[in-house]
Amino acid sequence: MAETPVSVFGWLQLFNSRNLGLTVLLAAVMASALAIVNTSFKSRTVFHELQKLRAESNELDVQQGQLLIEQSTFGLEGRIEQKAMDELDMTLPDWSRIIMVRHE
Image 1 (tube, one colour):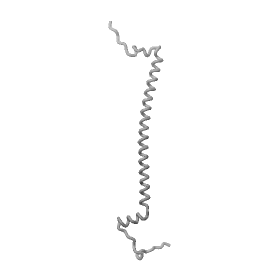
Image 2 (tube, rainbow, N blue to C red):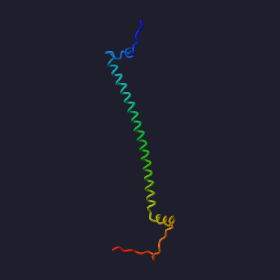
Image 3 (spheres, helix red, strand yellow):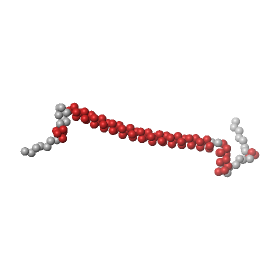
């Protein structure tokens, strides 16, 4: 007589009334383990993104400081006059050539 093959579930007797609680508990443990792995992965991904954003924030803070220093340097009146004379060959006109216009 040929024996019929027994399935894995039949061999383990997981769905037997005596082992049904153990099967449910095993499924709950597996679901919990997968949830922990998923949460850990998401947490690491978000933490990595946070680190990138903090680095970008630091770079922007440095850039803002440099721009503020540059703004204060270029805003000096003497520097503007000196650049106009050096780079644009501008000169101060004679007082005799200046015409004042009055608005009434």
